[in-house]
Structure formats: structure tokens, C-alpha cells
Length: 489
Picture: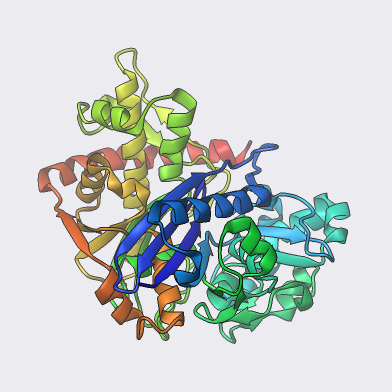
């Protein structure tokens, strides 16, 4: 038996999944790492933590599965879009990586919108915001010129990790679409956009297709990870499209609801839908796109709550289940790092409102879970206003949907049936993509037919949907009242 390996690098952890050529999951493993906050608005990660997680994950998988490394046919890595790393002439980091949730470049993003917003939108299908690489590069140019001067290469997260494995510097076109340095019409790095950032195109990686084999594991990386030297490594791509793929969404009209570090509602279409409140990326299936909403802090809000106030997820869920819808007036807005759809406002802050002496920790837990659901309701309502057609049943993806309470809450709030699969982790999608590159699967639909296994479906309770709609109206009023306060800070 031969095997395929996919490794995801998410907002707070790396997950590796090993599958056999029949599409069965053989083993998986997860390694957490921190996001660093060295100053207000900063969200950074250490590239050394990524490499350590890579090595630990591979070692754990080989041990759990008992397979030999030479039986791995190929491997693929994915990571969150937008996270970038500045490196010197020797391709060594000059500082920690800037995570996509970082909001330090708010001033630069505002200036770009005023000076060149229409031009940038026309080329990239997006408006300048703090999540994109272009404003982040401008921040370094203006605020940290000593680091910017040392920079000779710009890496994206998965590409740096893959460079460690292969010594090959490249990226894929979906990752490039998330940089705001790429012309989405002509599918190439854009000289004008690079000029605005103060860099030239030679500082950016060559672009290949996600399923291209770009090299093999080096002797050095083999020694560090336990992989066999020469094992084929494919380029890979971004985590969201890999989750979409792993969920089985490979046809027009398919829709996914993601509840992970960030939240997304994505629809598979046959064209992009340029809109200042949507994110448009190509699908790995030629000719398809997956435009969708973007909510910054979903499962990240629950993790922040757990880490800050303590508790175990199962215990927290159990206590929240005893609290009625609306948490008896307590409402949470999950704007821990600003918000995207439908506000694109990095100044927004998280908040608990309506606190009474009668509220317990269980109420606060319930409010956090509901607040994320309201944020996704906000996104869905905006998506619906654009009249993009999609199926009535969505696939729920992301670690947050594993919790029965939160999944039911989300189904009720959105008024949608949510099906789940045995695994929709992006690392599974990467393993599937590695299988296409290795010739194990004929195409994306073939990979889905062999690897994606539906487990359950959650139906909305119409009475609860109406209750969430009532609370959502108050949720919106609170946003509208507080947004001007945050913009003045």
C-alpha cells in the first residue's frame, strides 16, 4: 500500500493527514503554535514554530501509522492566505511573519483606497484592507525601513515551509491572488502594484499551478523530518480552497460554511464576483471560482475566550447548552481583530454588551458562540443580496463545526441544513491534491468520490431561526452604535 500526505498550517495549529490510495484516512496529528502580539494591532507567527510543527507532525504520523517513509508517494502543504514573511538575500527571515489577521497597516490601507482604490480593485477584485500583503509591505517600508531594506524575497507561509523541504522558491496562482500584487485578469504579478509596494517582481516567487510537482525532499529536510529524500513535493495552495475541496464542493452551486480560525461562506461559481465585501479566488478546478464572505474571528473567538477565561471546550459547550437563545440579553460581537464582510472595518473591536448581575460564565460562553453565528448571519445576508445562486444544503467545514451545539446553533441561525463529512480538514484536501499530482486520482471529482464520506446532516429548527433573527436585529443596532466610537480611537 502507498500513501499520500497533506499538511495544513492554520491560524493556531498545524494538522497533518495521511491517506492511502483508496482514499481512507490512515492517521492524523495536530501540533499547536502561538500567534504573537508584540504590540497593539500586531499578529505575528514565528517561522521556526512552523518548521518545528512540520517536523513533529511528520514524526508523529509515521509513528502512529507504522508505515515507512518511502511508501509516501507525494506530499502537499497548504496554509492560510495572506500571511507573509520577509527574507534577506539568503532567504533567511528578517523578522517574524505577519499573520493575515494583523491590522497594523490600517493607515496604509486607508491611503491606498483614497489614492488608487479603483485601479487596485480593477486588477485584484478586492479593495485595500489590512489583510492584504500590499498594505503590509507599505507599513514596513514606512515604519521599519531597516527591515524593508534587508528584504530581497517575499515568502507566503506554505511556500516558506515548502522551501525548507525542497529548496525551491515558488508559489501558486491562488496564493498570488491573495497578495494584492497580482493582476487577476492577466494572471501575473503586476508591475504597477509591485511599484506601489516598493518592490520589484523579482522579489516575488515564480508562479506555478497548485498540483505541479516542484521538487523533492532534500537530504537535509529528510534528516530533520524523517521523510525520504527525493519524495515528490507539489506546490499546494491555500487552506480555504483545500477545505472546500475536501468537503466535496467541486461543482457550480455547491456551498460551504466554514467555522475555523476565521469564518467563510463560499459558493462555487463559474466566474468571479468582484465586490468590495467579498473575497474572490480561483478554485483548483479549472474555470471555477469560490467567491465568498470573510469573517475574521470565528473559532479564534472561542479559543481566545477559552485561553483567557479558562475551561475545556466540552465543559464550556455543556454549560452553554443550558442557556436560552439570546443568552438572556448578553450579546458578543466577535471583532477581536476588526471585521471583514460586510464592513471591511479594521477599527471594530470585540465587545460584550447587556451584562447583568444575573449572568454567569455559561451566559458568556453562550454569547460567544452566538456572536460568531450572528457574524456569519451578517455575511450570509450580504451574500444573498448579490443574488449568487447556490444549493440549499451547505457543507459545514472547519474545526468549530465538530461541536454539535455550535453546529445546530449555526444551522438555526442561518436557516440552512448543514451536512458534515468524516473530514473536511484542509490537510485532507492537500493529501487529495497530492494524489492528483501522483496520478492516483484522475481529477478533482474522482478524488472526491474516493475520499469524501458524508457523516451527518443538521437541519434548522424554524422556531429557533425566528428567535435568532430577533436577537440579530439588536446585534446590528449595537454594531451601528459602537462603530463610530471605535473609528475615533
